[in-house]
Image (cartoon, rainbow, N blue to C red):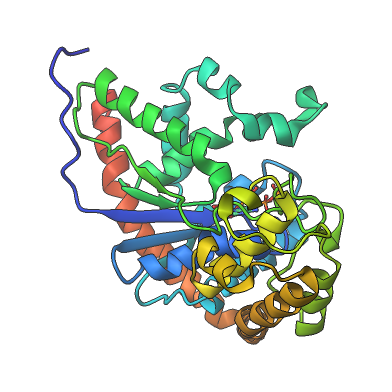
Length: 344
Ligand code: AQP
């Protein structure tokens, strides 16, 4: 322990994020995560992984997991991630994530994890039957980020609490091991109208892979007709669109569709309202469907093309894993020294 004033992290900026290979990707994953990755790769050194260690916190069919991993990699590239710019890799191929996660399990406090709302939501009424991994998921997430000393983490709104936990772990590690400024306190990049895309069937629930209704979400692999049909069937209210954001706030489903339009068009919700205020959903939904098809159908098509040649995807993942290991290994070596392990 030390009385020294905290020293801020002085290393270079770096982006880290990932998506679990636990099912088909949807519009929420695309707007909350993938689109941001693509933008950031041009600005900052970017590491994007396929979170297969996270995926097995709930049961995954061993015969399908590797292919699901390729599918996420294909979605990244189809959304615009360039493997020559960003490092794209499977989490399980870089063992430093799991090793640092154990050390962080000994830094994080039970009380911190007890507060995590995602565990409560995902474990539901059967907490005692959930895997221990599901409970310590946010600790692994902290290791994912900090093993690369990442400073910026593009995620959807649902990950905000986990990012706060990452900052708490970094701060406690730096303090306990007398290493001020060793780990950065990473900033979540959440803002934007796509940060929380809600279900098309229920404006109070987030769009999610695990929702039993396929009509609740738009999958990246949906074809143009399916995308249009899902938007047509999306739940709404009978009122025309209002003029102000404030008047939209109490209308969850309308707010969600305007938010999706804004995110896909690269506009603000206010700009969308300026165009559609006073118009009903009979006008707005077809315009949204057209925009969604224009933006998403090519992504699905490109994904299918990439998946037709798994050897190319595997080569990209293998090369990414090598680069990621090179970046992660020195951090873990320093951590082991700080902790005081023999031989470190
Ligand atoms: N509805 C959403 N709106 C905006 N962003 C979202 N994300 C997920 N849902 C939305 C963001 O997508 C990234 C990857 O998510 P993930 O697959 O790692 O985990 P998740 O959050 O558990 O995704 P799902 O679809 O909700 O899966 P299930 O149904 O299994 O819980 C993250 O950045 C997340 O914020």
